[in-house]
Every structure is written in C-alpha cells, then in structure tokens.
Image (cartoon, rainbow, N blue to C red; front, side, top):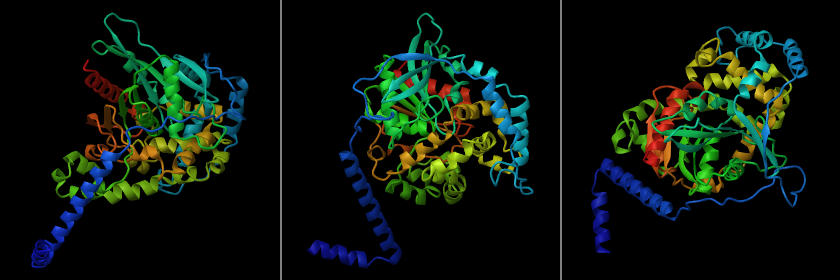
Length: 467
C-alpha cells in the first residue's frame, strides 16, 4: 500500500504534460501486451468446411473428371452485340468533367466505335484459346481454368503456381505474364494454373446463398488436389488475394508460398498508434520513408479517396442484382462500368484526363476482351454478388481473425488502392520473406506491369525454395 501511495504522490507531483506522457505510455504498453496475449492464443488455421452450390440437392456422387473446354462464338452472338451497340443512348458529359463523374461519354463513343467497327471478337477468341482450357465439377459447379506447362528443358525445376484474379478482371489479366513465368529462370520455370472464380466468366455461378472467398478457396484447393499437386505456390490480387490467403489458412502444408499484390489487413491498435506517430517519427513505428510518402496525408489518400472510389462496392455489397439488371442488358453500360475501374484503379490521376488514361497502359482490344468475357457469359451479376456474400458477415469471419503462417511475398505497387506497410502486414502475414516497393503500377499489376510482377514472383519463389 505504501508503494502505491508513493507512486500516486509521484504521479500527481508531475507537470500536466508529463502526466499525459505517462498515461499515453501506459496505454500503449497495455495495448501491446494485450495484443501479444491475443496473438499467442490465436488459431493458426481455419476449418476447410464443405459446400454444395449447384441446383437442387447434392447427389450421392459427383463427376470428378477433368474435361477439355474451348471458347466459342457465333455470327448470331456478334450480330446481337452490334445491334445493341447501335441502339445506345448517350448523355453529354459536363464541361471539363473528364472522368471525375465516371466514364466520360465523349470518350465512350470512341470506345464503342472501335468495338463496333474494328474489334474482332473471333480473332480474340482464337487468342484466348492459345492456352489449354478445362472444366471440372467441384461442389456442384463447373469450374473453368487454364493450365500452361513450360517447354521441356534439361535440368529444369518445374514449380506449380496458381494465379487468381479479382473483380472486374478475369483470367485474361494473366495472359501477358504467363509466357514470362513459363520461360526458364536459371533452371526454374512455372506450370501455371489460372482458374475463373465461380460466377466469373466461364466458371458456373453458385445457385445458393453463402458463396464467399472461403468457399472459393476450398474449391481451388480441391482443383489443385485433383490436378495432382500436393504442394504449390499461390499468387493473387483483389479478390484473388482474399481467396489465396484463405487457401493458405486452410492447408498451410500444401501452400509452399503465397505472393500477393493487394493484402487485406484488419485494423488494430498497432496500426492506429503508428498512424499518429508515423508521420513525425516513422522509425519508431517501423515505417520507411517510402511508407510515409505513400500513406500521408492519410485522410486524403486512405479515407476521402476511398469514399470517392468505392460507391460500386456499397451497391454490390447490398443490392447487386438491381445494378446487375442494367449492365447485363447493355454492353455499353457494362463496358463503362468495368473500364472506369481500369482507369482510376490504375492511377487515380487518370480521373483528370478526358480519356481516363485507358490507352496509356492498355490497348482497347485487351480491355474489350475482358469486357466480352463478362458479356458473352452473362456473368456480371453473379460476379457482383461476391461482394455481398463476403461483406455480409465480415466482423464475425474467422479468417479475418486468423493469421497466415506460410512464407509470404508482398509486392506493394505505388498506385494500389491502399498502401499497407510491412509492419502492418506482419500483423496478419507472420512469415514475410519478401516485401517489395514496386517502382510503378497499380491495381491490375499483371495486366499493367507483367515483367515487374513476374520478376518479383520469381525472386520470392527462389528465396523460399532456396533455389
């Protein structure tokens, strides 16, 4: 009691500023201790679970064969597209609005003119079919994927690697990086497996509620097992990041390494404290100079900017079918909805350009081929539902509370939607082998900077595998 009384007298004898410093330090230490106690008791895996997403009741047995698949089109399909393009009604944009109000309709007319008069869907279908496509039934759904093996070479180690896309992208995002990964890298080459998320493109859409990233992860683990892979590497961005992270949480023994370009970090006390201190004393909280440059001013870059750019997310996380009715019936509406994201998510500065900067990083043919994958499969609505399924019970999801313990490589592109420093990422990903500040590029990394991304994946895999 005497010691307690002495401490009390000492505390009240301090100046106000000194008292505040003592209180702040006590709160910080208490928070850190609480964090480490929680961390020590944290689960290291999540349940694999089970599911059935096809129509009706689950049958007693399911076809587990892998079937070849070829993308096809027809004159009727193209004729219908052209007729809808010709009937488009446009609204004049506001003066000097550029892309700040969404897709600029003046530039949209140029995109549609190219689509109608120059774009060759049959030629693009042939390009899509340059790689081998397959489908296999998993949990009641026909799951589409491509599989690309490297050319056979002597003394070459072949490493299986799954690439998972996000929204509003598709497997086509990886077409430029595939040949870079399958070539020989000092004795190492990748066998690439690239699936379509169920409800996206050529993968069948779930017929029942509840299909989230955990369900997709379980399906893709089944796919890799069915292909004969007991251990493999994973790469993902956007929803692909969430799915591959869940795969690593479910079966860490199977995932030799996880490589991500976008990583979801649950807000915690450590992050909040570092935000307050980091701008002025970055070294105290583990920030680098580049972290500071990318994070601050925090409100402008990570709050206000996100509010401006995530209206679509709120719609899709609440009433996806309503918006889906519009974009599923208008090819021009669909293109505007998708391509606006390829503008702002590549570089937010492109919002101030009349053409959204779209042709600075992409060709119109490449952009429209991604749109056509959604259009010809009528999969836009089902892809949008993935937001509602994932955000519906976000607070209580076990995977958000569970760490990732497999070797992890993180590629931080400067124009990604949000920047997460390594010190933040470590609260979720506990075994980070590589963390790279990429010199340029945005959200659609494989589409924008395939060589940079391929080099980072190769570097990560070689470090993990000690190759």
